[in-house]
Length: 317
Image (cartoon, rainbow, N blue to C red; front, top):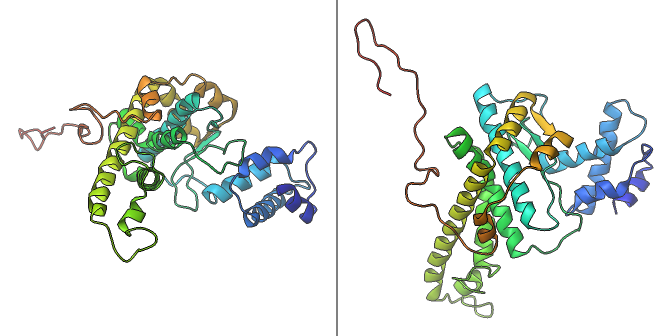
């Protein structure tokens, strides 16, 4: 389909361009999305003064479509750069670990801390799989939950503080976890049941609710919280196990604002998995032990001690 849109525009393509390589990046795109992608690639080539459109222009167009238009420069302060770099490196490391246990998973290809028009302060690009998938398996869904929590986990482990930067990750993870429990029937404790249908009293008589619905909704809330807390705890364990790798990626990202290519892939080759990750992908929900440093037990940042006036007392730390 992408080839048809390219042919209809009569785009002069760079020698060696392979449309299939770009098509694998566009899984889930509609016909209108593909038409816009071709137009965007042509515009990008024109702005560069190129006479042909190549793979680089199409890749940049895909990223614009997926994540928004890249700003000219980073909008972050130096301190924020450190946090956002660790956050994105966390997604990359955790996502790579998940991919080690799930065949057919794609690896992160680009990390960026340059803001985009969609409002994201950072961006980790993981291309879709080679197949245009219509289904997601249970282990893949749970793997995605852990990957989404990778950014928050990196803030906890590498920075010792948590920020509001995980807003979108948490919203997406909550939506996915809720659907897995309440709609997809993937929770052993809830069972193969549609909570929405139960609340409506059945599809044939939606005017009357079921007395069981309130109890089911409470169970769903409990299960979703347990699943998300476990996903975060698994991600914390993965970041801790791969902290050296994460710090190397985060430091380079903070300095250069973008990391990609062979250097990134070589670093991700060293990512190791944990037994708890395997347990989680199989359906177990390991919980943090009492006193674990998740978000509620992190220390306050240390501030410099300053004297108050001559002969005065020092500020408490």
